[in-house]
Length: 227
Image (tube, rainbow, N blue to C red; front, top):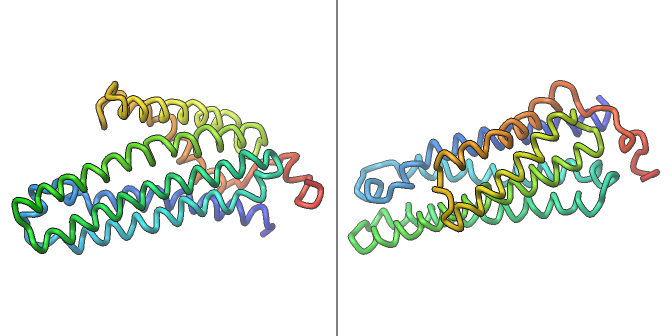
């Protein structure tokens, strides 16, 4: 297996891993997002911790997608390739803040009380906003606009799919800012519809490189030395 094919395989696996860890993590820690019930319940703390551990693995996979592909994308545009790494790091930072917020909710649960319930609600609110600004905005900047443009220009992915990234990235950014400005409801129909092109694009970033590798491109033929 050549180095480029190996890079494509790792890149695709990491992107699919982001789906697994994000969806699996949310399914596990979702009870902690409802502090009134969570704080009064018995058990569930271990489940929440497992879900948040998935979020930690999500951060690793997110950053990994950018680091793995950087040596290739820099041959197309080094500034944008570095911008993609930066966007993923910013997104990961917001995810990390959300993780810490929910871990604090789990900790407060051991000494649950009326006053601590208010604290837990505040921490959940922090986590919800980190999701809006992190995956709900910066993922559109990084995976959608920057990576979509780089893949379109380089031809490493089918250009028809890359267009989904450009459109989806723009829609994600608009919907995320719309939620911040209270134009759209968080998790409402407008925001859900806006995520569809980006969802298709990111799923293709996982599936296509695994099964078919990167398409032939001048930046692959040039090689690191020539670039």
